[in-house]
Length: 551
Image 1: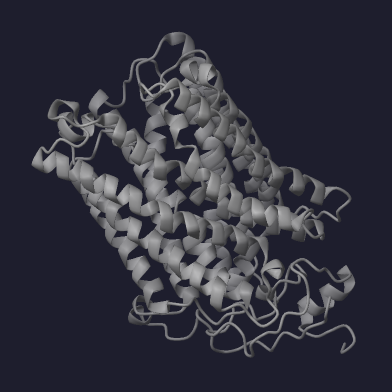
Image 2: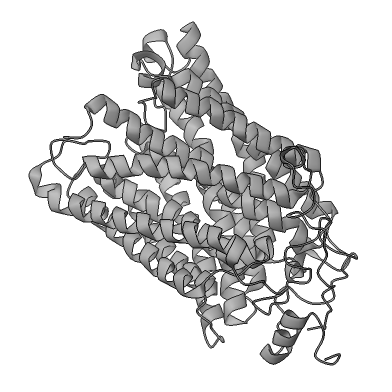
């Protein structure tokens, strides 16, 4: 790998230039906008976590002693809406993606800085409208808004909640557009497609889904609100509508949305596995194209959500086959990550622990998804806790662990400070244990026939629910610990060098934190994506900003 020289630390960067609130609210710096998203998304995650805590406390006993049935319906609905639309979907693209896409391709900013800021304002407006709906009376339809309950029978704030989600969707569309244009047009000289980090490939594929899929859910929610307000028969069979049409439209977006949530996490994990085993990802091109394959196949499998919804048996067979097929590019990633680890020089820093945890949890989630793709088995498991466990292993076990791993990995670059490594490793272990204790019992509950969305249940299920609630408590502690020490590190953490992990990527070839325009001079890329120097040379380069020869 070619030696490089990191410029001396600049006194002007996005953290210390212009301290005023106005400068933040009007900023066009992608790094500041990423931090605005980070604060906003953390706020919504906290709200969603409170709802999750209420759900688990309610399920400690078989007869629902904490919440009424109506309140419980609102709590699990609002947990799903906040977590899916305001945390999981934007979490990695809006924060790590916003911060890193320009840095990793050698650009000074995203292609459309003003649109980037606008996307955050749109996200906040959608969030505010949704929070208003929740505070005004809440919504009780489930996060899927199934009709005709959501259009006719529910007396909750369906239209206001749908409006918040409708508005926030435009934030995703603008972010995806910005990423695609930036990746196509603003790569540094020498940054060819097959020199791009896999993190960039994952965000490119995710952006395609954002642009093609999000308008579908926006129109679907708009039609739902129109039917509810004007009583026009679109989905409600009593008015001449078709409720199955709603499910087709909703899941045509919402299954690809699964990959909006998890594909960026796969990009993060590719970086972690390669860089902490100090090897190029095995089958780099296969992993890169598998991201695009997931994006394409993701639009072809929505029908497996309708196996028990009067869908044609023949259509069900086709969707079952396609649902098995979409597992292939995901399996390519898992197998290639495992091959990358083989004989690698592995170091078990906090980000790597989260990356390994992702592989384990995502594999369990993916394997259990095959049960739900099988027609006969899905009839038994549909609408049970098995589905909840599978969904959370993919979304929370996947997206959340990748998000935490990426946040720890790039935290020195984001803040210019290091966090306490011992606490980081401890919290990663606690999160992993707590997560498995929370959701493994739910697979058993679903197999035994426990329906989801119920808070009254037979007493023989109580032991498993108690285990799940105990695991959720441990998971909550595991998530609280990094929130504390990362905030602490912003003021008291040791000063981070430009390249604390001794890695070759472009983001490590500028100061920590980066200057406002990222690079003093436009970099010229002459090395491959994961081309590692010997560890002793990288150590000198990373710590002192000089090549070994110059030292």
